[in-house]
Length: 334
Ligand SMILES: O=C(O)CCC(=O)N[C@@H](CCC(=O)O)C(=O)O
Ligand SMILES: [Zn+2]
Image 1: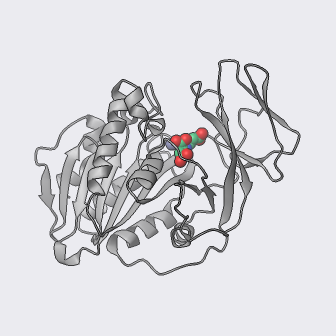
Image 2 (image 1 turned 30 degrees about the vertical axis):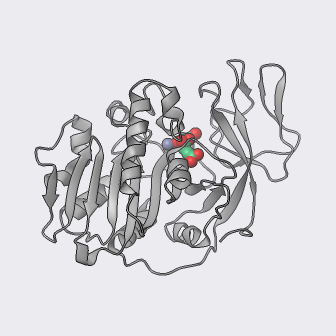
Image 3 (image 1 turned 180 degrees about the vertical axis):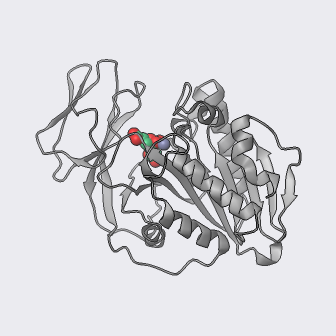
């Protein structure tokens, strides 16, 4: 296998490759760009005009998505997967990956769309670098642009695999992309309705990519991901990469949700009234007191059909401590 196929090993060892550019037997070019960043280019005659950004390790302890990208890269480097798309592979937070932690000082996935400029430290610098790598990758005109940012969650979930779809004023969510996600095994999609500071919000809002955060199961250390079944996603990604994806427009079995409210933690006095082991998508009944904060702020459930995802009272003040979601329909998809 080409040495550049071992991007994960290089990244975990904190090493630069001796050779920055390599060609597979089929003439696919692999180019190391910087730590945890590698571009794959098919031979020009085979290029189908699609650009695909695959990122993982934005949270360093979410290893199943890192292992999935590692397998895809090995397949390409060995000539077993034959790309017809340009691909940018990114491991988001190498130092956190090496330490097996979500982040060191700052959550990288809260530092996009300008937020890194208001912060200092290695993670702010990395977010700026990731924005630059993505901007440069998606700068070629006339090509389709797709970004999947792969994650696993802190807690268990009543719906194991789901996607979050960013929002931009004047842009409609795509039915075609949702069908593609369904075919990749996603069981639900959360349609956002405001701008955000995540990586996919950046590529969606500023780089005109179709962009999704994918949640694939519960976060576990390297080598312990037998319970995270990414086989449908892996098959679909290979098909996208090789340009032989079966056509589908079916949303059958896909549950759609909209954000009702984001619960923001304002102070150290924030209290979340949920058990520590509560699962994502747990239903909450109207009248339930969900959270309390400084100045007698109370979060009481008003919505019918409300559910909670990503509840986390330990986030820094000013950040999202959970999302209240409600079921929605496919009306409004483009
Ligand atoms: O389990 C959790 O609480 C967080 C899992 C995770 O890392 N989720 C992403 C979602 C990003 C998005 O909103 O698109 C995150 O919180 O960064
Ligand atoms: Zn994550």
